[in-house]
Length: 199
Image 1 (cartoon, rainbow, N blue to C red):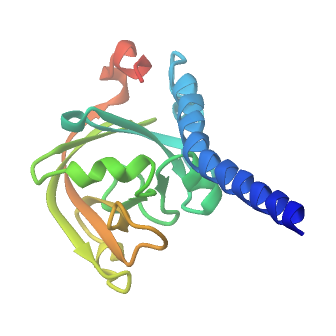
Image 2: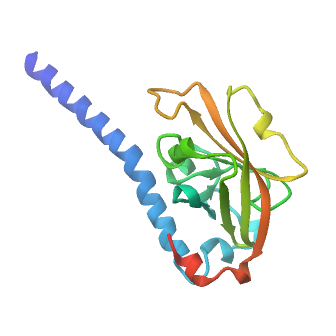
């Protein structure tokens, strides 16, 4: 019995170690793969017709200059998509378009950096249509039942959403929301290849 118990505990420990390592390493390798795709002369998203964005496609590169952070955004917010990177909520406008563009991410991987974001920070989103500059106008902590960040908007706004607190064991009880407003647009033809090729 003692030997069987030891084996069971060892197996359980190995499983949890594997699960934890996968949760942290899979997002890293997924982002590295997306970076390789974006190092091509034209981002992969730039080659896809506007109507052909599928679940899991890489649609944008999100940069937060002050925090020296950069992420590749995929289409969709399911478990599979969010393991690869921040996910664009299907049915909401694409970056740069009029309306409420929503991007969600995990607090313990890609979007942990949001804990240091401040009002006035710049957010850069590069898509097949160009570069879009957003400025953070509000940072808030809300209940999951609060649907304010999900509501449609006539203005071009961006919401980044993750769970809160950032350091919490288990399912976090609140949501951390960054609201930003479109402040500038640069056409894709004016985005230099060197800028597109960095990661």
